[in-house]
Image (cartoon, rainbow, N blue to C red):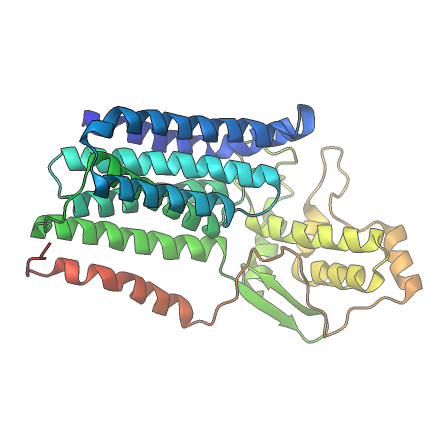
Length: 370
């Protein structure tokens, strides 16, 4: 088990630190220096790259041509992910590169541990990649669960890609062969793959899939919940919030997020930004959505001083009336951006079944040829 100590500790650090990194990055942005979010991850990224170079040089005597090719493919893969797949602001891209290093190292060390434990190279590679991808899913689930972070399945794909980089690089560094996995090994990999498929579909359902609420009077908007669920949630919060208010910002890493309240806050932000920009039609539409579908948030959520946190001030309501702004059926809210995906009902089950297909032949009794 000592072989698994290093990757297990790194994986535990990744998942365990997930709630706290958001608070740390916000503190750096607001109280220290925003540029550190680019500088520090960049230094760590290139420091890790230099460490890999030293490792390779020390291992060079036993490396053959196929090893160098595998490592080159792994490095090229990593370079593409660090550049072409980078998104958002520079500090976000820098943090994604750090995730590339962390998940790549976990996968590489898992590959080495499994290989030295007697697994075939194919089994070690597949198992290391799947296990590392599961760590990525756990990381994003924790980020979805707490208020200070936001889970995103796209990040899971980046984490899985980083695992692939690590496995390919590790195959070059520690060696590989085409020996056929045993039946027991193939079934173990199949079970891991099924777990990954189930966990992935479950996380997508939690963090991304939702409904389009179409109102013939107010327009449409995206929600994690159906119209009936929103009605039930309003009743639940009206009964609960007067006795126990939700936490107020700044949220702590251990605060469990109320996604109904967060969703309503998207519309509050869209309403306020539209009003400040004198986009009266959008402000009126967002206020109408809040009045009809999130009334508990407007009526019950209070600041520590007792004032309603999200209610629209009377003078602003009066200004909208003076401007003659009213919601229209053609309005489509952009609150929340692209966080919520609208899929046809059949698509998720179909993708799930397709994800299970690679595991089917692994359960068979016929041996694989290398």
